[in-house]
Image 1 (cartoon, rainbow, N blue to C red):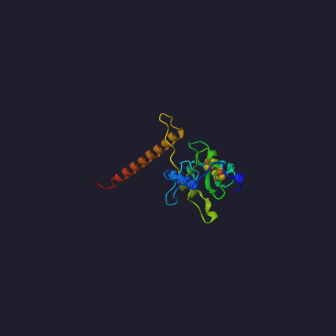
Image 2: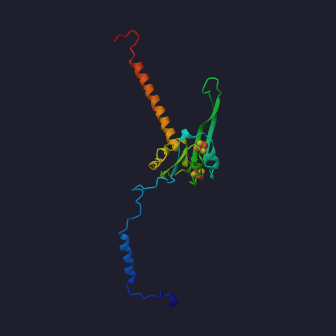
Image 3: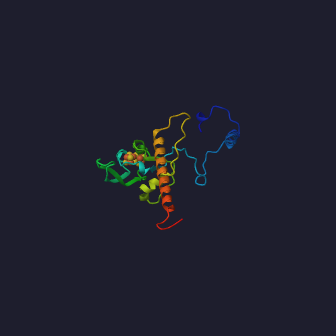
Length: 203
Ligand code: SF4
Ligand code: SF4
């Protein structure tokens, strides 16, 4: 160090050591930020972009996600099916049936555009991130695997007290109630059928 580079303040022998020890003592008492992964699971925020889950029932095969994906890493195959008229005299309709839905996570850049643009809430972020593979081809997750990720998607946060319930919640509850009522009616009908005496049988 040249004389011009000497620090202007006066330094006593051992003052650097004392300063270093002071820093050590100060940080020793602070909460550690080092995560002992993989022994301890990291506590990730619920909106972490880990992997994408597909809620297949909501997908109408509109292809918007595949078209908007900047990496072109969403692969969708489908075919058309004719649906009989809902009421007698009505017209037949055609609908898209999903044959394949896959995302190649070796290309995905986790931008979230596919989730943003899906008009039918069929794609969701999951905070799961432990899906490293030794073969790059295994990073293409097909529809069954994408569905499995759905179980790891966190529930939406609770509504603010007094807030109006989103119409999607009401629609989902109505469908669930209808399905439960239908199930109960079928169970009751099956029970009545089994309780009915056989022909010629007396009680
Ligand atoms: S997150 Fe982005 S890159 Fe990944 S599949 Fe969706 S749109 Fe494509
Ligand atoms: S945008 Fe949504 S509904 Fe349309 S194909 Fe993609 S996942 Fe399905």
